[in-house]
Figure 1 (tube, rainbow, N blue to C red):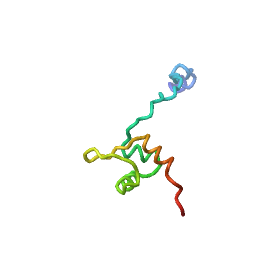
Figure 2: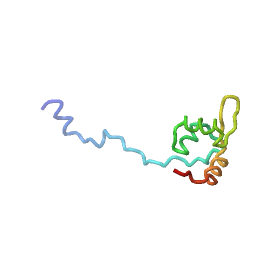
Figure 3: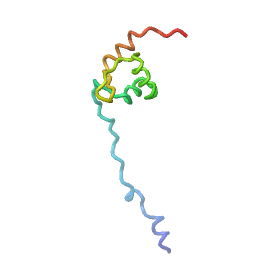
Figure 4: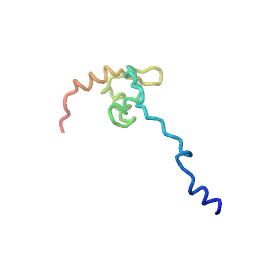
Length: 87
């Protein structure tokens, strides 16, 4: 009997570590102040689109030094009040 035959007949459940039950990620409260990347993810657009819209004054934002910051509440209000675009 070779060494590989011994390992073939050995119970494998002793070698396998049981997987712990999966937990859902903790729910975090929404952040009130967003950066451009977070706004892009929220609106499902590119970061450049966010910078362009803010630079043209089409999107509510504040400038802190070189950074643009966005209020989640102001963005949601802006989205709710924005008239539908005519195409």
